[in-house]
Length: 221
Image (cartoon, rainbow, N blue to C red; front, side, top):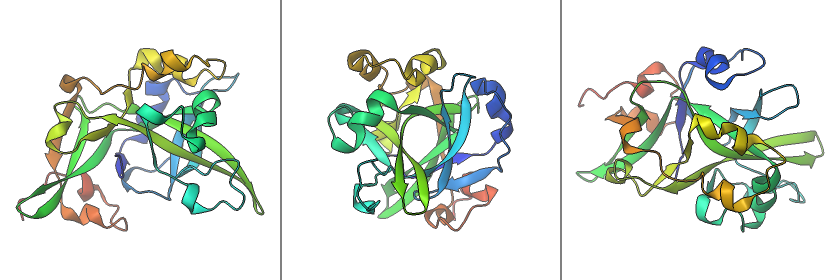
């Protein structure tokens, strides 16, 4: 599962993802479900960044019922679940981040941990998007694809977001790529050597806490 993440250095996104325009985003340290998040999609003019609701609403949802919304799509069933079948074939995106969070129970207390690349660089989580047409117009929404955890992450949780290798960005984004088998081969755990982690303050538990302290190492209190 991936239920919180961070985008602390959005200024790095243009170069990291070869965007056509520099995004004007504020640093975010405690991004939570149902909030708008940045996604990167294919366009004929190049990769473009948009904002989307985190929690995919399928286009066929009659009333935008949140029952159908989901923040995560399991890699194993992404091509068979009704909410994800069409987006997986036609609407794939990159979800940029430079950290994500997972909780691990120790001493009867669930303690949040920040996981990032060891070099601190931004990375792309595999994402899906869809558009629901509601009474107030179009709603662009998205989901993060998750897979089984690698050995590094299994200390904290059995699942982790799919972190795509940069060489696979084009294949994932290509709307004309409908090769389900080859696409699913991209949905694997990240190399263990890629990641580092540290415990953070439990103030992260409250999504109203959005300051830089959410991503800082806990002081042990």
